[in-house]
Picture 1 (cartoon, one colour):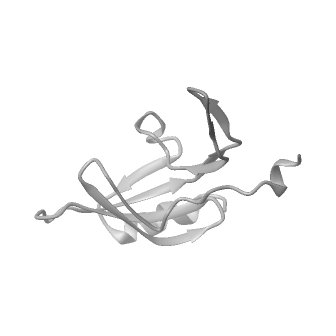
Picture 2: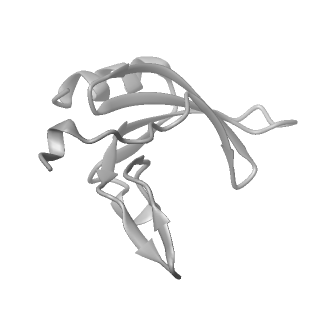
Length: 98
């Protein structure tokens, strides 16, 4: 099967992870900006990411469907960046290929 014709489960436009809430503000192709907030905190960062994907695999006897992936911590500075303002996030976003 051609990779381009596969159906991939997409990253949700809003999700919670490790006590943070992420809301997608902008996305074109494989690049996106997510606003990162924490309830009860004035924290308001922006994560600029290049969305990855995998073709599916078997783990523990279970089939994992093909899906997009949000960069993990080991990819920070390579495919993901944290910005403290929306202006800085937009500048970084504009430098990435879509």
